[in-house]
Image (cartoon, rainbow, N blue to C red; front, side):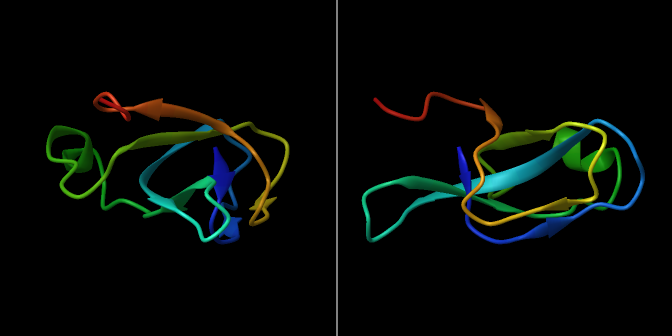
Length: 77
């Protein structure tokens, strides 16, 4: 999934960030990351479509880069 906006994440950790999906003017799916408020977000991921997986070893992920996306529900039906 392509990132819609740059994401900064300082700790050198493998990071699963909640994200919502949208379709750009180019017809491509984009993920917009929403930094959560703690473990309760996993229980109630309102408005989110899934997780974007960011590998450790970087603290800046740029818009347009492609990352794994793990959906909460079927994306297409």
